[in-house]
Image (tube, rainbow, N blue to C red; front, side, top):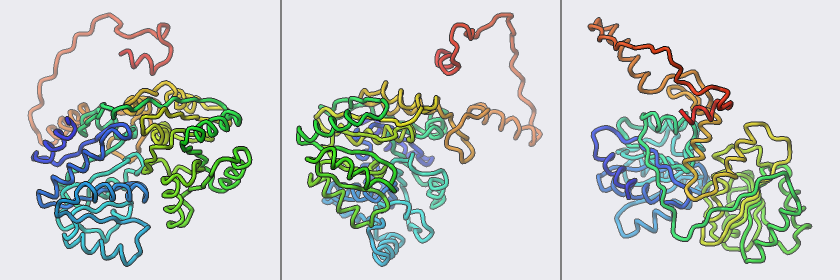
Length: 414
């Protein structure tokens, strides 16, 4: 409840809200967003809800319609599943103020979307959007409240939250009966993969097989059919026609298939409680936050879930750190700790520029504003403030390299 309370307090404050909600999949981030949207509409304002995929847009649209059905609130969705004429009609209604909540993908940030009274922007899975996308949203209206939802914030966003530029709420309470996902990391093992698929099918469950090479994904599906003939296998990826992709995903959700060979399109937006085994082929090609998000597709019920992260080539130091981090952090609510580790591995990026990761020779936000204020005072001709005296003692306050060789670990101890 503290995250909901913080959001409500932000929405009645004088300055616009810019809050990051960090919580694992299924922890209630959408509930926080729904209540914020309801409050905005009750205050006579419109809401834009930006999501990275069409499937996730459809899921949120269905949830919002079901939850807010008793109230006179008009909710619409913009996605590639809508015809051009349908999209134009929805945009026109939203621009007139006839639509209260508009849910959609990148389509929401096109120039023809000009809200009449925008009060709240919600960005779900913010790590899937570039800085340019998010900045375009803020240009829609000055003084708009912004609520960002993520399980694993990108390094730049987390750095901004830790530096005090953005407010941060962490949801740490897991749903009842949720179990941690047992995670295996290792070189590709055909026998282990086949056994994992057979075990899941034997308990009437479903399997995600992540194979992110669309050119050869059908060949991989055929190979699995030969190895596990009892499996009912479907293929899903972003290059399928919209209706075909939607039908495949719905058929998998309705258990017409028990194995889905898929690209990263499952990274967000598909909630299949009976899918409790995940196999990732070439895990070394994925980012840490992306792998964590993908692992969150399983283990969404009371059943024990399993994730197999297989790599096929020699790992770089960074790839090894990423996979080791996932193997170490399997407890519920690990998203925030994994994001901190990602920040350490990749760096915090540029707080004032577009880079979302990378180690920079930078100053903290407090020091930056202090230096800026001093420069402004100097330009205005203001009287300089007295400098603080410094006492330099002939003592070393640093941890020697001989004690802790790795720099990142030494910094942790500081």
